[in-house]
Image (cartoon, rainbow, N blue to C red; front, top):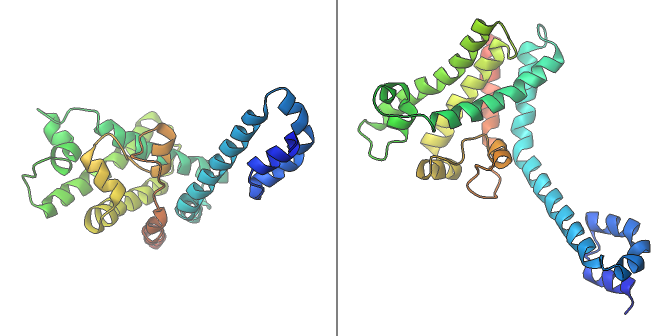
Length: 238
């Protein structure tokens, strides 16, 4: 069996790999003489695996991300430039991840016991308050995270994220965390309570920053109803 046929035998000829082989195949004999055939196989396998993961992540994240963008435009298109709406929506995801991670890395003792109730109560190993009170306090704490962003913009005079997008994000985050995660339940959320330094959310940023509990992608389709209802509520108010 010559080098070209050997390569054809080793590679799975379907999908993206088949297209790559179509372009690379004429050069296989030369690559084989130079000792690069194994590296070519490894590269194609890596490329295929990477794209498969990208495809899976898109299936998991696309519905909620698309819905969030559409809702952001629905509530802001009359007063805010399209590019700013898009950038603000991306920034708010980063804010959610960053503020959540920050609260997991500041003290929860002394005076911080009352300031960082997210750790002192919600993540307490031994609960000292009833569940309803825990979730009530956690709701207020989550709302504070978005209030911080609002006041930072007011004080600095830099209004990157429109107030209604902050409100939209707050309503979605609080409802997902309290209802979808804490009341209904979520494997990712459960693991985050077992290890407070993983799964800060949203899941795609955990993958980006290496704080995910595993390589699986969280199915965020359940966030879509929360986002739509929050959007309709804001439109009704305004």
